[in-house]
Length: 147
Image 1 (tube, rainbow, N blue to C red):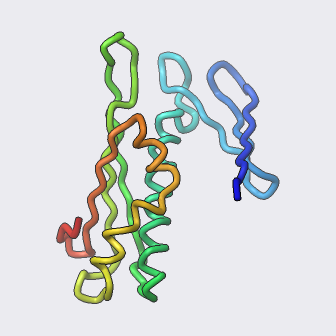
Image 2: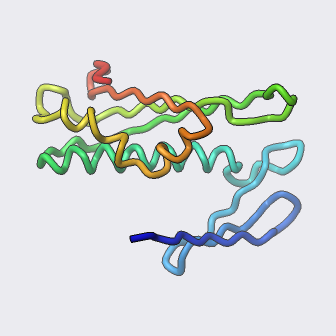
């Protein structure tokens, strides 16, 4: 079963665009940082990083809830490195995603199974990985690295 996602954009001023998702979602304004734009909204690279982080957060939550676990609140930080490629064009070269569970490792059952599979549920990350390396780290509330 295929699914279609449609997003429309309309130029507001210069590099600032109104991004329309669906009828129930408020309009989001994206903008390039200076010197092109005024930085009055997330840039396209920001939105890409947010999409990867959001999808991985959802996937980890889904994987843990399959085992009736409550890891909340999950916090996620995404670092996207933008640099010039061989053709001297700016590109997102890689991303690092750090997910932090709101619980200690010892309070979550089946954590190893969830950690082994959650990335496979992430539509966005698995698609982005076809062109951009994405590293994923998972920590518990105490800062202990789990993956």
